[in-house]
Image (cartoon, rainbow, N blue to C red):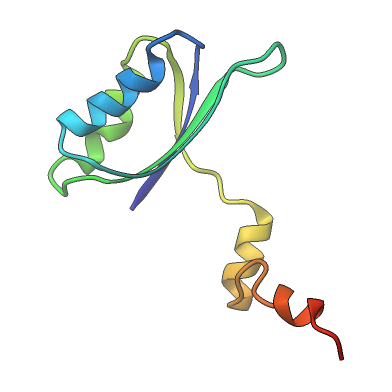
Length: 102
Protein backbone atom coordinates (compact mmCIF):
# COMPACT_ATOMS: atom_id res chain seq x y z
CA UNK A 1 0.00 0.00 0.00
CA UNK A 2 1.19 3.48 -0.87
CA UNK A 3 0.13 6.46 1.23
CA UNK A 4 0.70 9.98 -0.07
CA UNK A 5 0.16 13.47 1.30
CA UNK A 6 -0.85 16.16 -1.17
CA UNK A 7 -0.90 19.91 -0.61
CA UNK A 8 -3.52 21.36 -2.94
CA UNK A 9 -5.10 24.66 -3.94
CA UNK A 10 -8.75 24.82 -3.05
CA UNK A 11 -10.00 24.60 -6.64
CA UNK A 12 -13.52 23.26 -7.05
CA UNK A 13 -12.39 20.14 -8.91
CA UNK A 14 -9.13 19.19 -7.21
CA UNK A 15 -10.54 16.27 -5.20
CA UNK A 16 -12.35 14.78 -8.20
CA UNK A 17 -9.35 15.37 -10.49
CA UNK A 18 -6.96 13.53 -8.18
CA UNK A 19 -9.26 10.57 -7.54
CA UNK A 20 -10.21 10.26 -11.23
CA UNK A 21 -6.57 10.25 -12.26
CA UNK A 22 -5.83 7.41 -9.86
CA UNK A 23 -8.84 5.33 -10.94
CA UNK A 24 -8.08 5.80 -14.65
CA UNK A 25 -4.64 4.39 -14.00
CA UNK A 26 -6.14 1.31 -12.27
CA UNK A 27 -5.18 2.29 -8.72
CA UNK A 28 -7.44 0.98 -5.97
CA UNK A 29 -8.20 3.82 -3.56
CA UNK A 30 -8.37 2.46 -0.01
CA UNK A 31 -8.49 5.65 2.08
CA UNK A 32 -8.95 9.40 1.52
CA UNK A 33 -8.78 12.29 4.00
CA UNK A 34 -9.38 15.81 2.71
CA UNK A 35 -8.98 19.08 4.57
CA UNK A 36 -9.96 22.26 2.73
CA UNK A 37 -7.60 25.22 2.58
CA UNK A 38 -7.87 27.92 5.23
CA UNK A 39 -5.95 31.15 5.72
CA UNK A 40 -3.11 29.36 7.53
CA UNK A 41 -2.58 26.21 5.45
CA UNK A 42 -3.09 24.95 1.91
CA UNK A 43 -5.66 22.25 1.32
CA UNK A 44 -4.40 18.80 2.24
CA UNK A 45 -5.22 15.29 1.10
CA UNK A 46 -3.95 12.00 2.45
CA UNK A 47 -4.61 9.15 0.05
CA UNK A 48 -3.85 5.46 0.50
CA UNK A 49 -3.83 3.36 -2.68
CA UNK A 50 -2.93 -0.02 -4.06
CA UNK A 51 -1.19 0.76 -7.36
CA UNK A 52 -0.50 -1.80 -10.09
CA UNK A 53 3.10 -2.96 -9.74
CA UNK A 54 4.01 -1.71 -13.22
CA UNK A 55 2.82 1.83 -12.42
CA UNK A 56 3.56 2.28 -8.71
CA UNK A 57 6.75 4.24 -9.35
CA UNK A 58 4.85 6.82 -11.47
CA UNK A 59 2.03 7.74 -9.08
CA UNK A 60 3.76 10.70 -7.38
CA UNK A 61 4.69 12.23 -10.76
CA UNK A 62 1.14 11.78 -12.13
CA UNK A 63 -0.34 13.60 -9.16
CA UNK A 64 2.33 16.31 -9.00
CA UNK A 65 1.54 17.31 -12.60
CA UNK A 66 -2.17 17.88 -11.98
CA UNK A 67 -3.71 21.35 -11.90
CA UNK A 68 -4.14 22.64 -8.30
CA UNK A 69 -1.72 20.09 -6.80
CA UNK A 70 1.07 22.01 -5.08
CA UNK A 71 3.17 19.21 -3.57
CA UNK A 72 3.11 15.41 -3.31
CA UNK A 73 5.11 13.53 -0.69
CA UNK A 74 5.06 10.12 0.96
CA UNK A 75 3.10 10.24 4.20
CA UNK A 76 5.26 11.28 7.10
CA UNK A 77 5.21 8.78 9.93
CA UNK A 78 4.60 10.35 13.33
CA UNK A 79 6.77 9.54 16.32
CA UNK A 80 3.64 8.17 18.00
CA UNK A 81 3.12 5.68 15.16
CA UNK A 82 6.78 4.62 15.28
CA UNK A 83 6.39 3.99 19.01
CA UNK A 84 3.28 1.86 18.45
CA UNK A 85 5.05 -0.14 15.73
CA UNK A 86 8.18 -0.73 17.83
CA UNK A 87 6.22 -1.67 20.96
CA UNK A 88 3.81 -3.87 19.02
CA UNK A 89 0.67 -2.16 20.33
CA UNK A 90 -2.15 -0.26 18.68
CA UNK A 91 -3.65 3.01 19.90
CA UNK A 92 -6.63 2.56 22.20
CA UNK A 93 -6.14 -1.21 22.46
CA UNK A 94 -6.45 -1.22 26.23
CA UNK A 95 -9.07 1.56 26.51
CA UNK A 96 -11.77 -0.97 27.45
CA UNK A 97 -9.64 -2.34 30.26
CA UNK A 98 -9.06 1.15 31.70
CA UNK A 99 -12.80 1.91 31.60
CA UNK A 100 -13.87 -1.24 33.51
CA UNK A 101 -14.64 -1.18 37.21
CA UNK A 102 -12.26 -3.15 39.38
